[in-house]
Length: 116
Image 1 (cartoon, rainbow, N blue to C red):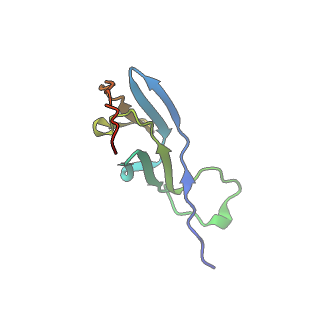
Image 2: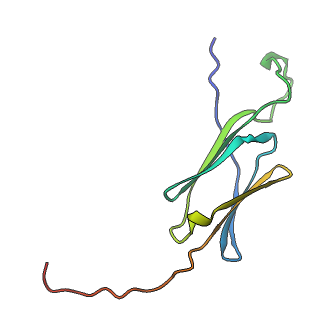
Image 3: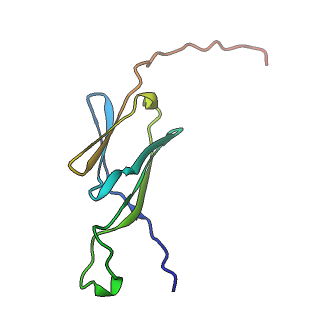
């Protein structure tokens, strides 16, 4: 019997503070070596893997709530963020990603032409 490795979904909180988008997620049990924060266009991807502290035969469990294995979360970002200035922090099992809003909010007047 082949066991498919399921992928878990991270829980996240997202809010704006001090002109930055802040994303926090508990990733306890995942090492930083097994965790990635990626930006692809306007999409943020957090992925990694939680490795159990010991290998237990699934038939031995009386009760199981913890998720062990690969996880990921994809977040579509607002257009007004400066993803080139993204920062990620890890402390006490919590991942925090901060992305500042773009400074340039200038309005540009577009000339209306009469020819195509």
